[in-house]
Length: 229
Image 1 (cartoon, rainbow, N blue to C red):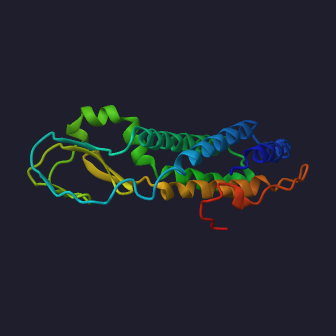
Image 2 (tube, helix red, strand yellow; image 1 turned 120 degrees about the vertical axis):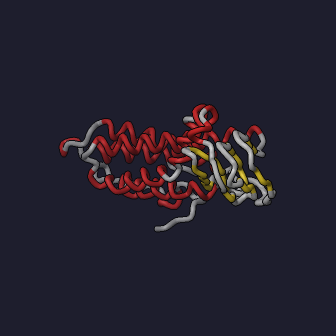
Image 3 (tube, rainbow, N blue to C red; image 1 turned 180 degrees about the vertical axis):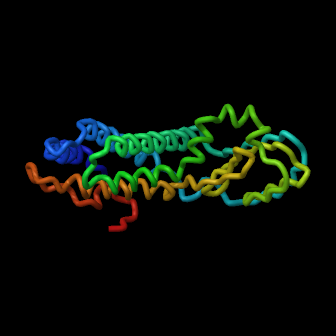
């Protein structure tokens, strides 16, 4: 269960009582859309498994040039949700960045920075998919060369050149860009820090003095995410 309806009221009242202190009116609008996006990301990621695939290691030795390996063994529906979730994380990152740049966030400054940092943990994989065409087309820049041992069992020899891979194995997605190997946990729990950061925002926003209201307890916001409060 989310508490969007109550939260939108809290956002409006919290910002309203800070108008005379110079808060930017866009803060309320940005927060509204941030929580709409957070709710959508939450809905997507709660369907994720702890492991996308078995963590099987298939020993493959690669020594050639410009080889492409792509393995995302998901159903169409699963892949839609995974890609959509990465896009929503990107939106949250940019929304948090816009909030930071408005200035005068008062008590929200630290929680917004926390949300920004949580979303920024997905920066590498987000940039990868944003510029996927370039990664595919420019193996000279983005392919890996030389010896690499990857956790899912692939071994690139010292003689290998400008090879490309995109592999989902276990809870991680493995990819290469800028001539280097990358990996990112994209399982259900990997997104939890984003929702925990959102709870910190909720804690601040529901403490307004204008029209004091009894709001649902913080545990009801993204309720199955492990709490740190």
